[in-house]
Image (cartoon, rainbow, N blue to C red):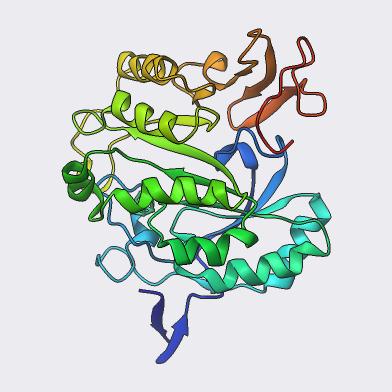
Length: 296
Ligand code: SF4
């Protein structure tokens, strides 16, 4: 999966990427990790899942799908870390599955340590405990997709078991990595209330991002998630006790704001994929002093 032939030779994706651009950290999405910082974003071809709705299938499904051809260029970790350092930013591995090329993460983290550059992941969470132990010291923050908690429907949607994903969420937290979770609300598949309960059972402090499903790949004929279904999922998250429930676009500014879980004051406001105002002082609500969990 991580090897391809190029110009008659063999090419490895271990230090290669299909993507190399700068985004805000909010776009990964991280809402409780260094708000407003820039991320140099990379994505090596390949993924351990084959989700029916994957919007990135042209790079994630390399080796499985004829539409997904080899498309990666070599990356120089020192150059990437240098770019991030110059912006006071981070390096993100996103769009595909970063745990398939741990060497890249470990090397970026090694180089980044001296210049204050941290590595963040967007991951499907399908890792063994050994893989988490290997990579967690190099990953400052991870946003894990939890696409559902029903084993059968998760296997149908992704090709993989959900149990390792749930375990990985807890394991990264135990290793000290900051964890946020994203759930695409796929009509007829995702059961938001069940997902919220499982997540709250790990920790009510985990920020939960609800992502609107848009028709793509093998689900091109399905309808997008309705605003009502998204609002119901938000309510389910709050009913489960999750302190921080987010919707990027479908519910407007309100869906992206961070409120103090005690006094309700807005402590962080955001535009679309961007920070507007950060009122947090030393990790606390400026109005009542309650701690707001995150890496500020
Ligand atoms: S885990 Fe993400 S990148 Fe991989 S196939 Fe699923 S949606 Fe695509």
